Image (cartoon, rainbow, N blue to C red):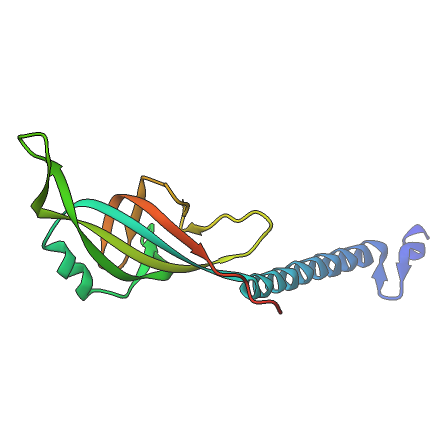
Length: 167
């Protein structure tokens, strides 16, 4: 008799609890998926364009023309494209201390200034990242890497953030 009391139609109490748990899990998964999609769309709307300059000193002079021929070049980190690109490169003389204690220009080396652009999400605390590296003025161990170009120990000498577009 106890078994008949627990049955409701063709379902028993355990069947109903199992169906309710499955529905709850599906509803939770749907809610998480929709909230994640909404956050991604909101981040795209609040993206800020960032332009920064990386200075690489003591580079062999012949690399300037090689770098120019591969620009613009998409930025990479850890073997994957990270959004943004190296837009341009400029060349400046590289100076060394001469035997008489005076600074002289080294004809075999140059200083290269790379300009790169990327987009980052705007927030209350501004942290600009390209891959896992933060972009901030004065950073001295920056690795500038693209599909065809890689320089380590670059120094970020300028960063410009554009104002996010008001929606």
